[in-house]
Amino acid sequence: MKVLIVYAHPNPQSFNHAILESFSKGLKDTGHSFEVSDLYAMKFDPCFKLADFAQYEGKPMPDDVLEQQKRVAEAEGLVFIYPIWWYDYPAILKGWIDRVLSHGFAYKMAEKGIEGLLKDKKVLLINTALADEAHYKTGIENAMQTVMVHAGLKDVCGIQNAEHTFFYGVGAVDKEILKKYLETAYRLGKEF
Image (cartoon, one colour):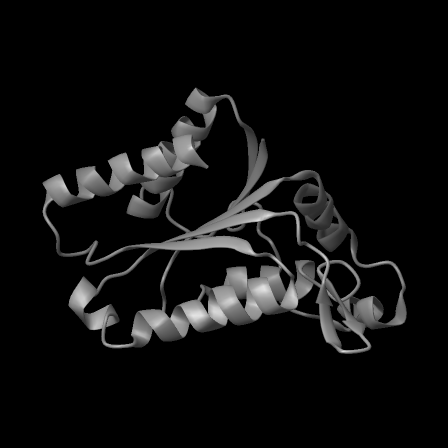
């Protein structure tokens, strides 16, 4: 399987980067090929500009968008690794989604609403969160999954094979729990 990992964290020393490395090792050990779109390292511009409206007119999209769309099109699986900031994606990833998963590429308007165009993709979201699990189980996690997975990936893009994994309390848990999280990331890569 060919996998595209979309990674969004500005610090290469972060726990998110350790997750990226563990997950990637799991993919590699299973024989999957993969590439990483490290949005901060590549200085991806998340700002939706006038040129991005080309999607609605059937005109060519900006080159940076076309490059990412090519990566998405070639991948059988998409993995998003990022921290939860204010109960949502980091802005750079939200901008990537706005610009790359665009009309005419990821979805189109159909007679009965929206038709997803990425039906054959497998998707995994891996998130770190500063708060503990109990905090997210108050309904926050379900709300985030409804927006991120069900409304966006499934309903708009047509992706039915989408999973979401949370690593809670990463700023406060002990090293043994962090080690278990990294083992889980590796296993997720092997099983993807």
